[in-house]
Length: 255
Image (cartoon, rainbow, N blue to C red; front, side, top):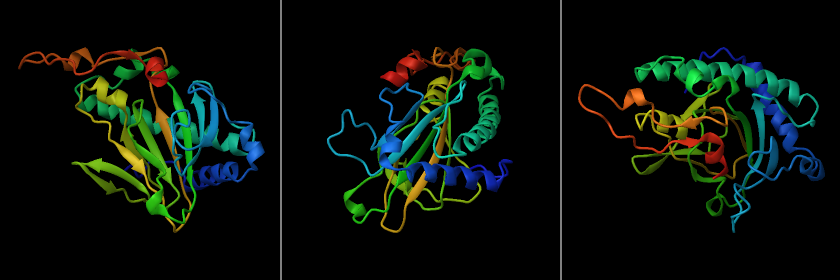
């Protein structure tokens, strides 16, 4: 949980309000931004992965690529300007966190900048709406999953529902105003050869109110091949086997 991050509370409130404005649009207006493929720059819809699901999840979503090229829905008015500022501010926090993480591994703070072309790295804005559910024991917002990429920074509207898996049990994660919850992604686990773990998490629903979250995912450039850092596989105590196979980030997303 990150506090004292320098992003004004007013901006956090504004981006949550802007996203609520999108979800409040008429259904036909939201359909303009439906998208079909995982690499479409703007996609909105319901559930998790409707192409394979037999039962839908209790979730509406909007996913937008905001870096290296910035996209935004044209509705509602004002969302584009707010999301641009928000994306830039959060990207700076993520870069600072990645520098510290890399140094904790004994690598240069700029290692990812150089090896994965972070200046062209994918930043994906994902906002999720979990409406009030009359029978929450029969529904789920999102299934257990881990996040692709390096780091995801999450804010919420104050209504809980996020759970992480810890020692085989599901644990509730509290919400704290003016803070970011940070989750390490699959590709940071791969890069660190398992020293950092990508944590399984899921979204529950409740009958007490509508929950909304905004996740900002930060990944390498699409053409980067992510594999364990060679510097972490060699030590005075003997070589360590690579626990993961290198793969291009774009291929990983499509799989």
